Structures are given as C-alpha cells and as structure tokens.
Length: 175
Image (cartoon, rainbow, N blue to C red; front, side):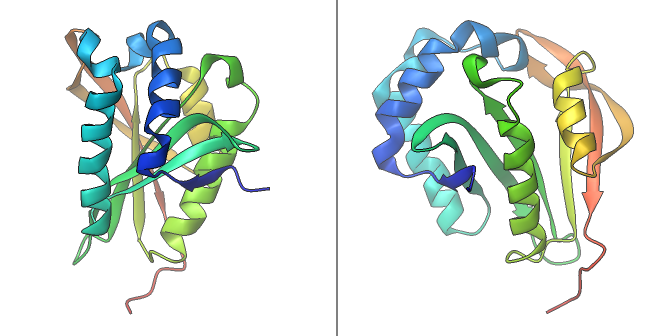
C-alpha cells in the first residue's frame, strides 16, 4: 500500500487540524510560527502557493497517509533542472504516528519517484544535529551525510547548524 499521495486544496482542513494537534511536537524542528499560521485561511494560501510551484515543476508536495487519514507531509522542493538535476526533500509525521515507519516508507517512495519519473540525479536533506530519528530515516534510505552547515536555518527562534545528507541516482541518464 502506498504511503503517499498528492496534496490537494481539499486537504486544507485536515492538514490544518493535524498541524494544530502537533504544534508543540513540531516546534523544535520548525521556524517560529504565530497563531495565524495554524488557521485554515493561512494554510489554504500557503498550499495554493505550493501547488503553483508544483504546477511550474519546482516542487512536489505529498500527503503521508495511514489508509486514507493524513498523518504527515513530504515535499520535494527546489527542483532544479539543467546541470544540477536535484531537489531537497523534507518531511514530518504526526507525533501519534512517529516511530511506525511512515517517514521511512514515504522517503523511499519519494526517492523512487524522484529518481524514476522525475529523473533527478540528486536528493538532499538537512537535519538538526540532535534529530537522530530523521537521520536514521535518511540513512536507511541510502542517504549519506556529507557535512554540516553552520547556522543553516532559522529554527525555533535561532540560527541552527544542520547536518547535510544526500543520495545520488546511480541510474541517472540525460533524456
């Protein structure tokens, strides 16, 4: 059974409710979010922007699902063609589904999609140094750590270092 499916505007209310329930759980890994972020109108506007980027070929946004229930989200962002043929992968799973393999299966499915249908050469991911669970997900999916970026992202109100991971597509060929 697939763990991912495309996100649509019909998912806004379910995704917003999931974010509200997981606000404290996700806070250490995210930028600071004001109360307005956790509302349906804001999430609808953000998702419409994501879907515009998706239509332009710069992003792919997918729901992580348990049967038909959304339990997280995974995105390929910054899809770049030309000499780079690369994208960044980011994901989160709800607290009550953490540790059950959803992130690992979603990363595997997205990597297969990225290296198959999208014909990308490289995927990159970043994690906070203390995010051992996410590092395990990446490593189990063939990602290798290749460095640390100092003060890489503004997370939880301060600049945070991030470990950098990547996975190459050994089957990549120009089309």
